[in-house]
Length: 83
Image (cartoon, rainbow, N blue to C red):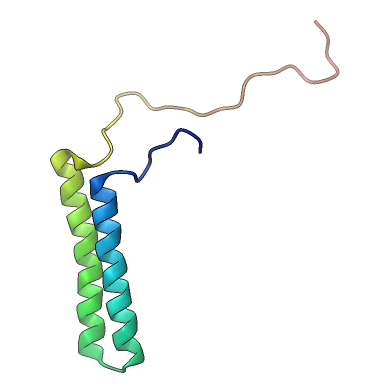
């Protein structure tokens, strides 16, 4: 996807970073067999999604496009057809 800036925003970076931290916390506590820590990590993971969504709503995400962009292949004639 050359030229795409999908995900390269402060909202995306912050949300994904928080989700990653929550995932690591939940994984560590799962290995340690500590259910309370696991669920705390899951709460952090959900918090990351909420923070990313709020930041996006505040204008720190991708701007909304008014017209959808369609990436389609160029219209070409079949190889054996001559004009």
